[in-house]
Image 1 (tube, rainbow over the protein chains, first blue to last red):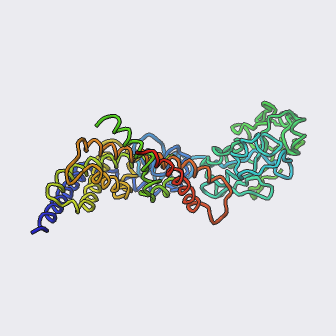
Image 2: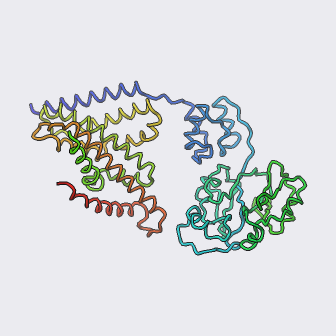
Image 3: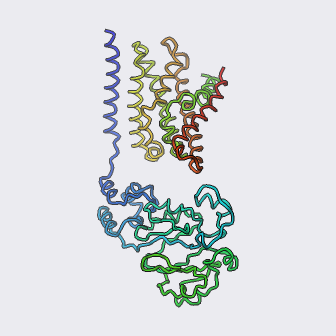
Amino acid sequence: MNIIVPVLTLSGLGVAFGVGLAIAAKKLCVVSDPRLEEIYAKLPGANCGACGMPGCMGFAEALIQGTCTVERCAVMQDEERAEVAGILGVEAKIKVKLVAVLHCHGGNQRVKDKYIYTGARDCILAHLVEGGPKECFYGCVGYGDCARACPFGAITMNEEDLPVVNENKCTACGACVAICPKKLFSLVSVSKTYAVRCKSLDFGKKVLDVCSVGCIACRKCEKACPTGAIKVINNLAVIDYTICDNRGECFKVCPTKSIAKKKEDKAWES
Amino acid sequence: MDAAKLMSIMISMVFINNFILSKFLGLCPFIGVSRESKPAISMGLAVTFVMTIASIITWLIYRYLLVPFDITYMRTISFILVIASFVQFVEMAIRKTSPGLYKAFGIYLPLITVNCAVLGVAVLNSEAFFLNGYAVKGSFLMSVAQGFFAGIGYLLAMLLMSGIRERLELINVPKSLEGVPLAFIVAALMSLAFMGFSGFSR
């Protein structure tokens, strides 16, 4: 008879907890919106975070709650965006395609090292040590944090240790803009073919000492530009892309070739 | 239960008998979730919570069901049953009532429903606070305190480990030691260090 008591006790416990859980599952169940899965299937699934939400699932939830608009996703193409907007019952705006542009072309051939760095090959860490091993404080460190951060594999490091953006793969998610310790990336409309490839705020002499292709703030571009789109601010030429219409006068007159032109094959010519 | 007893339970559970580093329980999440501090803290909090809850509920089961029927040899299976189902219930309740809390550590709850550290604390309670089949005076509160501080000890070990591993990520180590092998070596060294606490108790 000894076996009866434990069997009854344990099966009693099992039944009690089983029934309890079954009731709790009915009472406490969280109803999820059927559109959630539908929208999530249409999203890119890269979880890049460019929309500011924790991944694509978070973006889908925010869309349904109405705290976010479809345009916030930088990755989706126009037709996908229209589909998602269709599920939500709203209209999607057409978006200009942006790509990431690097504002430095002082590779390891053009800028000397100021000390021998033997630490972890990581731009953020190297930047902590006197602004990185390069002589130019503002230039690219060249350890490829951006290439590792890019969720789409659009950035590769070339032989000069400079990142090269593949414009077909780039979705302007902004991961490289956020991670670069020197803030060298910006998102520019794909139709713009000229860019200042320098971020140095130093005086002309100091720039010339450390880099052969840096902006020395000579203001030739400012004078040459017929539309007034390029201005020298704080010893650095900056193009206002709301005005610039690809005339290229600045590119022709730049004495240090720090303004670059995008060629037909999408590579930057300097 | 007086303050001195509480203090001795705390020192014992957090340092001397630390669940991970002295008793070697719950090593799976210790290695698996300790890569970064943030999930490690969430995991530690979830374990603390579940251990406290498990101490309460298994004490009740042991005192009012297993002891009176004289079937204490069934404690392992009945503890697994009640801990697993109760944690499931708590997970559902948190999901329903507080999405914020659910995001913070709810996702870790299913991972640890039948974790050996959680079962370990329940078994330890039933051994330490029941003499000859009778509950010692104040054993309920002591059980709860033991469960809670065991969880705090777990949290401490997770926090230390994740801090070390975050730094190890940035260091050049031999290829064969990268990742988990190095984590095991670190865990062994930390465990050795924690052995030093064993002289604390009487």
